Length: 45
Image (cartoon, rainbow, N blue to C red; front, side, top):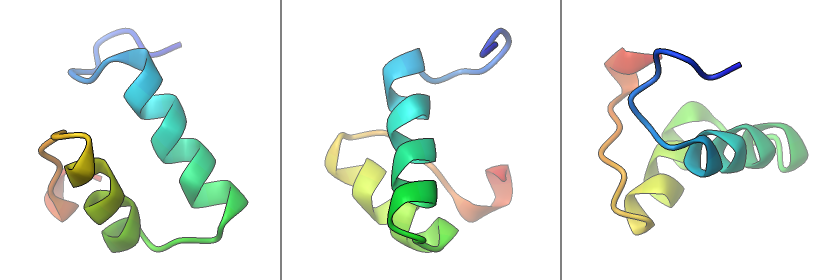
């Protein structure tokens, strides 16, 4: 399912969970992932 992505499966699942469960914007999810030291930028959507 996540083949070819550069982030670990756990981080991707957490980002999807935050986005869907709490109706967060991509920018909000980006800020939350930065806490886990995952470098994400809006251009990588």
